[in-house]
Image (cartoon, rainbow, N blue to C red; front, side, top):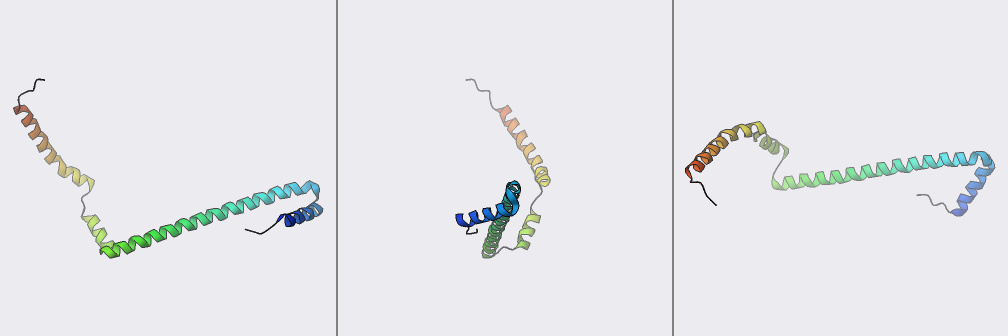
Amino acid sequence: MFDIGFAELTLIFIIGLVVLGPERLPTVARTLGQWVGRARSTFNHLKNELEREAVTQDMRERMEKQMREMGLDEDSIREAKESLLSPEQIAKARTPREAQADSAADSKKAQEPPRHE
């Protein structure tokens, strides 16, 4: 981030010691350290959010490109979704067929002779 070497840090420490005194310097250094830590944390969080947003945008663009290549658009997908049956409609349609299949299986079992093993 900043290119501060040992000599610069020593100079800053000596100036701080002269200006603030030995009693207040540790408190100021601790507070300054907390501020720097918060600033780094905020910067890292912002950087991660921007990277995540860039990846999301890239994925969205790829998906839209692939959809265009396949000849799909949002309207055709929406129409296809609306034409699908709801889970309730599927259950309602299955119930009579399953009841018939169950009764046919029961009657078939009744006709078979019992097996002895």
